[in-house]
Structure formats: C-alpha cells, structure tokens
Image 1 (cartoon, one colour):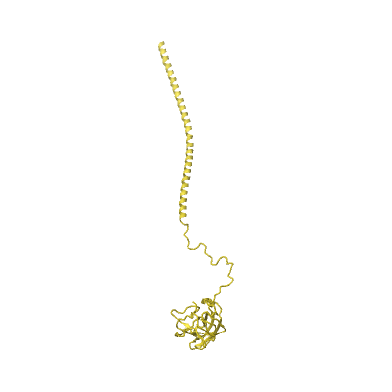
Image 2: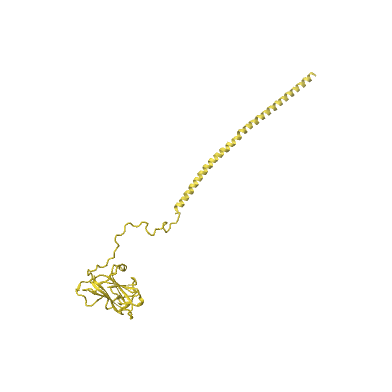
Length: 302
C-alpha cells in the first residue's frame, strides 16, 4: 500500500514538475515571442523612418541630378539653339537690301552754301571783235560801191516763210553800219517783221539771253522790200545773230534765200531749232562795210 502511495506520489510529482516545466516553457516561449515582437517592432520602427530619408535623399539626389541634368541639357540645348539661330541669323541678312536709301535725300540741301559766286559767269564772244581776225587784210579804206552779199551769190534763189522767228548767225570781217534783207510779204503788202541784232556769245541760248544791240520793226512793208537795220555807230567785225520775228504768221512774211549750204551762215528757226531735215538754205544777207576787206565773210563757229 505504501509502495503504491509512493508510486502515485512520484507520478503526481512528475506530473506537477512536467506541468511546471510546460508552463515555464510556454512562459519562456511567450516571453521570447514578445521579445521577438518587440525586436521586430524596433527593427520596423528603425527601418520605417529610413524610407522617408531615403525618399528625401532620393528626391534630393534625383532633384539635384535632374536639375543639373536639366540645366546642363537646357544650357546645351539653349546654346546649341542659340548658336544655330545666331549662325542662321548672322549668315543671312535680317532684311533684303533695298534699292532705295532708307532715308530719302532732300530735294534741296539742308544747309545753303555760305559762299556764293561774287560774279555771274559771263559768256564771251568766240572771236574778239575789232581785231580784223579773218579780214585777211584791208584792200581799201573805202567801202565797196554796193552792199556786200554775205551769201553764195551763185546759189539757186528760194524763199522761206517765217512762222515764229528765224535767226541768222553770220560773220562780217570788218566794221559795218547796216544789215539788209529782201523780204516778201506775198503780194499783199501786209505783215510785220522785227529785226534784232545780238553779239554771238558762244551758244544760241547765251546769245539770246543777252541784250539786243539794235531793234527795228517794219509794218506793212511792200512786197520784196529791202528792209534795213542801221546803226548810229559802226559795229566791229565778229560774229553776230540777226533775229527776225513776227507777231502774226498768218500775215505771211518771209525772206529771200539761197537753196544751198554756206559756211558763212547758220540758220535757227522757231526758238533756236534747226531747219527741217535735208533742207539746205541761207539768207540773202547784205552788210554795209566801212572799208573793203580781202575776205568778205568769216566762217561761223558751231
């Protein structure tokens, strides 16, 4: 009986011990589990914040890298684009050159010249008068018995009707007192002609710009009358222009001419114009010399 109690006691004790051991083991396991949980929590708590700094670091790094890369890429792109644009713009003009200046010149100078000529240029006669340059010497101190014909006396006769005016450039070789022309009035003794004598000044325009030496008007003269312009004092040798003009060409006035060329005359019509093409004529012009030169006329200048 006693042995059985001991045996039961030992079994119960073993059971108790085993139960205690089991409890201890379970308690230890529970404690280890809590410790592991705390460790995991701690580890998780330590690792979890690291994500934010990592993200910030990543963002910062990424931002810095991206910014630097973007700035470098943008700078390079901008420089490249600017270089290309500058090269293109520089290589080609921004605007096509204009044929006209950008600033139109003024019609008159903005500043008037401060120095003006003290004297107007004066046209001069081509031959100095009074020197008997082309007379070839004086044959006689007495004048010829008749007026000298300064024309080709052998040329065929014709007439020329004056529309506006007619000018005769001629060259007497010695001093003279009169010039005369035979002028038709075409059978009605009606019409007006004005004679005006000028010194030749190198051109027709310069000559006409000067003052006439003498002027005379002949009204309703007889048909084919010899009209004469006389001078109070003999005029010297040299070149002259005798202008014949009419206020009304319908009256019908003109001059007798020679239908050929003559080096001692040049004819101008209607304000300095030339004769019609293929027309050769000169006027039957007479002069009254005060003496007799060897050469009766001189060759007129062009």
